[in-house]
Length: 290
Image (cartoon, one colour):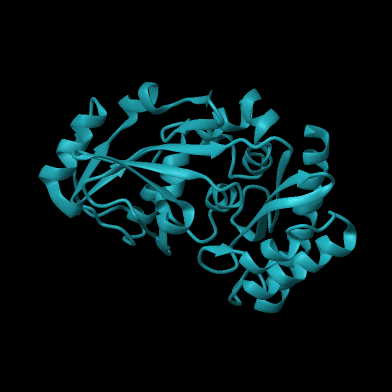
C-alpha cells in the first residue's frame, strides 16, 4: 500500500491566512487545493512536503467565472466541473469546454481545480496548454501585493512555476477579442488518461484573414508554445493548405520522448494532426463569432 510521508496539516480560512501560513512555514509547505495532482505524487513519495495548507474553505472566494470588461476572470479554486458547465466559457472561450470533456473523470472534475492543475505544471496537463493557447494572464498574490505573469513567464519547467513559496495563484484572466475562436484536440489511450498528444489553438480573424493565433501543445515536451507556426499564420487565410503547414511547423517545434504511450515520431505526427484540427475548429468558431 502506498502512503505519503508524515506531514502536518493546516486549514486556511482566508487568502491572507493562507499567505501568512506560507510565510511562517517556509518552503517545506505546500498548498492543497483539489488535491488530485499533489496527493498522488505524495503517495508515490515524489513529493514530501512537511506541511499541507488546505485552502478548500477559499472555494467560495476564489471559485468563479465572470466577465470583467474585455476579460473573462476565473478564480484559482474554480472546479473543473464548473469550467465545463460555464455558459460564458462555452460562448467566449470554448477551448475550456473542449478540454474539460477529456480531462480525467467526474470524480476528479468535481474536486480538482484550475489553480491546482496549473501550479502542478505537469508537461502532460491539459489546462496549461489551454491557457497558453489563449494568452492567459495569471495573477499571483503575496503578502506584499499582486503581480501578473503570462504563461511563458509562469511555467519555468516541468513541475516548476513562477509562484514563490510564500505566494498563491489567485486568478486567471482570459482576454476576449472580437472575432476569435478557440478549440482543443486530444488523443489518449483511454478516456480520461494523460494525453499521447494534445493541441490547443485560438484564431482571431480580421477581414477573412488570420490577424493572430495561439498554438500550444501538451505531452510532447515541456512548455510547447508554437511560435513559428503562429507567425506563419499571421495574415493568411485560414484555408486547409495554411492550417496543414501550421500543423507541420508545430510538429517540428515539439520534442516528445518515446515511452509506453508511443514513439517520439508517432507523438510528433499526432501533434501536427491535432494542431491542424484544432486550428480548423477555432477558425470556424471565429467565423461564427463574426
